[in-house]
Length: 346
Image (tube, rainbow, N blue to C red):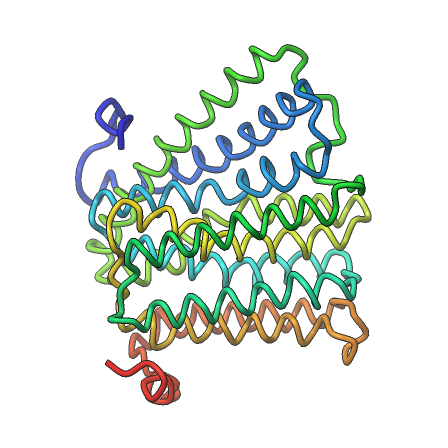
């Protein structure tokens, strides 16, 4: 990356410095993502953009910016397991952890349109990703372009469909930065902070994987994914506390869609992404299963709401997943991988 050559590396190499790089990298990602949203919202207001357009563009991209920068940096550093594992793990964390915690705080009412439209898109995008990943177990440049075109059409459709609506977006309905040039400076500084944080996270995660005796797949699916999901957690809880539960659900669904096709689409522009068979044979399947579980819990069958009991179920599935990938490193746990191999053969 262009800025990587001037990034400072103040901590020592090896086991003493790796945790510091990882922790401070996550802190940089979280703070930079927050200020990127604040600066983008303020600049958008100065340009007289609607809250809806700002929300779909600035807020959605802002909450997914840590995942994007980590995956892109990992691609440049030739760590494909971090590029893919970060995205897959973040999607699992968004559903199991973020919505689990949010619905424990405040039960979430789910609109019918959210599931029948955006939920269906999320399922189709997930299946589309699996199909593409099965093709030689690699995401190529032309597949990445297809992903980006789909995301572009989806965003245009959202804006066109809702152009007359004014909705609450976390972080928008508050006093913003008063001067446009200050807002622009904040955006530039936050963008640099994201690059800096991503560099440190990838550096620390790679080192931690070696020092802890685990592979990059496990680190990226758990610790990296959890850290890069902090903006989604903040946005969802904020929306729930503001009595806007549908925004909490929409934020996660939109983020998961953008993570798979937007982030991985951009990453393939750098280099083709080889998919680790272990990620494809277990982690991707688990992501699909929790996605289906979310849509079932939010369906009419369960009263179109995520209750506190539903939140506990989601948290259980997330905790179970973390337990499995650390304790049982066999990707064919419960023979799920063998079943999937019939669909996506080696």
